[in-house]
Length: 113
Image (cartoon, rainbow, N blue to C red):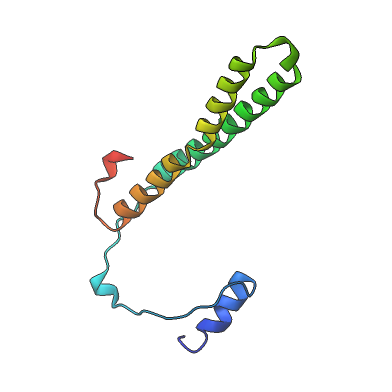
């Protein structure tokens, strides 16, 4: 298996990236907790909802710019700041990803999701 690893990476990654080092650990030293399918689906739906909301905010902000001649510049700036702040909420997704990894490696309890 170890000898075939470079070919497997090449095949799965489409040749992008180069594996610099391999670390092999006995399975007995690594424990993973299963996250049930319902929780995973809830997280996927949450990510989808965040993406949809981000798109809606972006679309509404663009729509406001079409009427910039009717809206005070200070209000347009405020809308731009709100849209930018909303787009910068990727930290929430990153926190959820980290939480799921911690749950899988038994560093967190599942009830936090």
